[in-house]
Structure formats: C-alpha cells, structure tokens
Length: 182
Image (cartoon, rainbow, N blue to C red; front, side, top):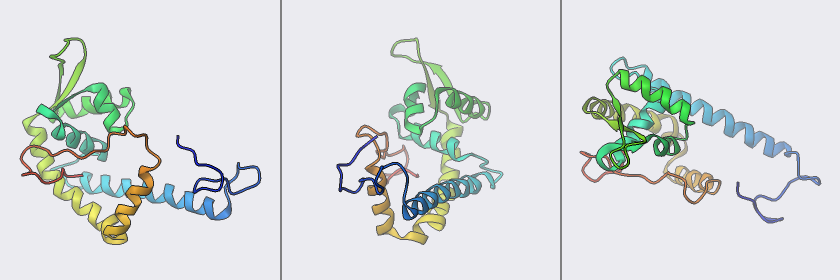
C-alpha cells in the first residue's frame, strides 16, 4: 500500500484521519459501484454468446496464457497475473480444462510444479471472444469516458499498484504485433 505525505494527494481529510469526507465517500462508492458494474457487463457480454460462454476471469486466463512465451505459465505465476488465489485459479483452470481450453502439465524445468498451457481450442476460443470483449470495453467504458480519460484513469489507478504489478501487455501469437486483446 502506498502512502502520501501530509498535504499531498493522499492526505487525510479529517482531523483524526480515519473517516472519509462526504465527497470522498461518494467518490469511493462510485468507484466500487462502477467497477463492479463494468466487470459484470464485460462478463455478461462473454457469457451471453453460447459459442463463447466464458467468465471474465476465464477470458483473462486465456489472454495471459496467449501472451506468455510458448503459451504456458506456472500456476503460481498465472495466479499472480490474474489476481486470483491459488485455490480459485485451480478451480477455474479445472473448469477450463474440461472444456479443452487449457491443460495442466508438469513443469519441464523442474518436474515438480504444474503449469497451465493454452490449447488449440483455447486459442480459437480467444480469437472468437476477443472481438466480443473489446466491443464491450468500447461500449461500456471507452465510448463513455473517452480515450484521454481512460488513459488518465489508468495512470491514477496505477499509482495504487506495486512497481512489479503484472499489468504489462504482451502480444499473443497470431496478432501481427498489435496489442493483446484485453
């Protein structure tokens, strides 16, 4: 967690520094409501298409695996990248494995750990799902707040992250050097 010096952007707004002011409370509630609603809308867009039927979390796993070298990641690294607990990731990957989108294999490097690998079916699913997801992001976020405000929002929220937060964008195979579908 990052802290600010007194008088800076993160300075307490009340004498005791504990409670949020009315404006801060409203901004905080707006943030919570909006981020929850947006995530629901993005997930709904993916789930409403019977050819796709992915959750937003499953889509993010496909994206992260597509961006990885050789399209596989250790389960622990994947959990960090998608901000899932290890147990939640295991459950989600099991569900995806049953659909043939990913497979879990023993790590070649040490033979001890497990890694998730994107399958051909998973790549094909990502190719179908990406346009649906991107349209949803454009419709519900980018077209509403605009390009400049989206970049500013990213900068603002980025200040709350640790320096090593796994947010860098990779380029999945087959996308001709364009940024990965997010």
